[in-house]
Image (cartoon, rainbow, N blue to C red; front, top):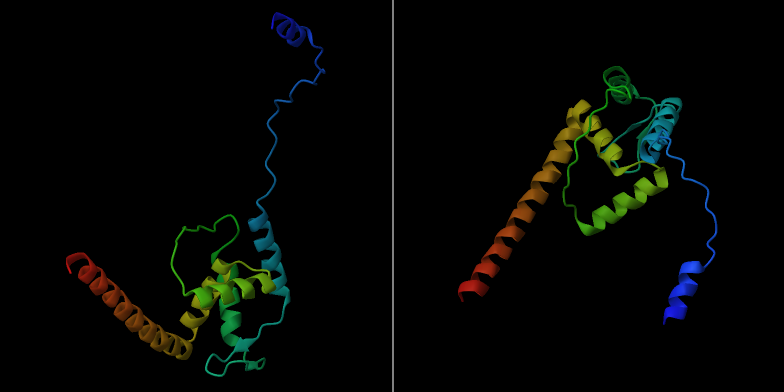
Length: 159
């Protein structure tokens, strides 16, 4: 055993160059960089409005609402002033899968898509009314499911 110990202690080890301890500036965040690239490309694309009541219908003759939204983005926020808040919410499985796929194909983040959709419906009262009607239906359905789930849990617990 002492033979093995002496061989380990006397073994020649490769020389390694000393570590560089200089502080290096971090590279820009990939998400932020992609966001700025997509923001630049969005500004170069002609504005188009979408009729939410007729899926698939795009009206290029009425870009006023989208123009207002793009001006809103340019005037109120710059990359330095942008403040975000982390938020987590639950979506239906089928919907979240479609949302992920759409965002992946478009090269944008889910957050940016949701922000843009909300700004669009804020600027268009007709679209807001349609979206709110659908949201109220979904909310009532989810409340009903939650109540059933609670009732089932109570029945299982207390018999």
